[in-house]
Image 1 (cartoon, rainbow, N blue to C red):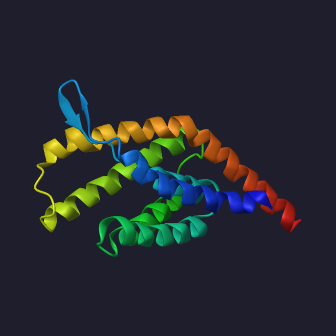
Image 2: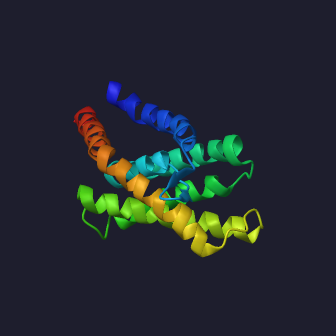
Length: 175
């Protein structure tokens, strides 16, 4: 029973932790100012989509995307569309790739990088940012991707273990 509640509970905790970790950014490193954007929740939802249920991940993505829009950016619909789209893409791609943890980690990082690019172009299009692409790439995208990759290297196995435990529990309930 506890596993059933643990998966959404972790999603809630990650949703609440993202802005706390964002407070550590920007940082100065070798005389350069870089921005680290934590994407803990969407990485977790990608793992749910790949290892558990694409439908459930898309539902969580819709819910948390709407919450993210309401509480953090005040543009309703941006994350509400992107989170479920990323989860759907991750779940769809599972038909064509091996579900090994290292492959899933790479896929997750690539999907987050694509999401960041879409966000950049959207904000650039509505003139919310005037940051040139090269600068965005060097001071935000690459450092954020590396930070999120480090996060997945540290916790990806725990996500997979938790989700596998839920899959086993669900199989026992059905039999």
